[in-house]
Structures are given as C-alpha cells and as structure tokens.
Length: 115
Image 1 (tube, rainbow, N blue to C red):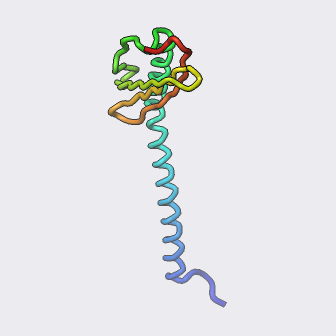
Image 2 (cartoon, one colour; image 1 turned 120 degrees about the vertical axis):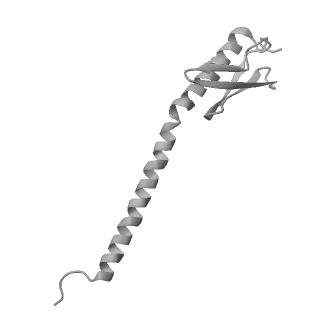
Image 3 (cartoon, rainbow, N blue to C red; image 1 turned 90 degrees about the vertical axis):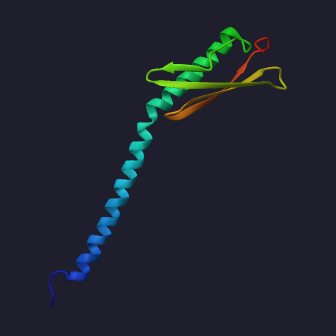
C-alpha cells in the first residue's frame, strides 16, 4: 500500500489552487474598482437631480450653467427637452465628469415650464 502524494499530484494540486486564488483576487479587484467609483457616481446623480429641481423651479428656458462643482469634481450638465404627446415636457439630464462615471436622469415637467 502506497502512502503520500506523488510529485505530479502535488504539482496539479498547486496549479488548481493557484488558478482559484487568481480568480478570487481578480473578482476582489473588480469589486474594488466598482466601489471606488461609487462616490463620484453618487455626486453625478446629485448634480443631475439638482438640475432637475432647477428646471422645475425656474423653467426650461432659464439660463443655467453648463458646469457645476460638487465636492472635488466638476460635472458637465447636458439637458435635452422635448414635448410629449400628453402635453408634458420630457427633460433628459446627463451629468458627466472627465474623471469617471456620470449619471442620467429623465424628468417630466408640467406644461408651461417649456421654452
């Protein structure tokens, strides 16, 4: 009766463990990258939501800045509007930063808020 592992069995076991460890490290790195952008994504959503509130308060025709600074980030805001069949105004707000992810928000404004 033979006891222990042969050298080939040991090499195969180490290779399997190495591949599993590499996969786990890669998954952890991807989740770290995703979480690392979360604050900037949240601030982009805040910028888009602020623009939606400005449109509700001041109207679509109001002169609003193209860029805003929130925290350490500068966001470019792009707003596109169109009238809907129901008479509402659909406003699509995109907040983008040169440094990472942005946000998209779509709001519907009541009539009389248009240009």
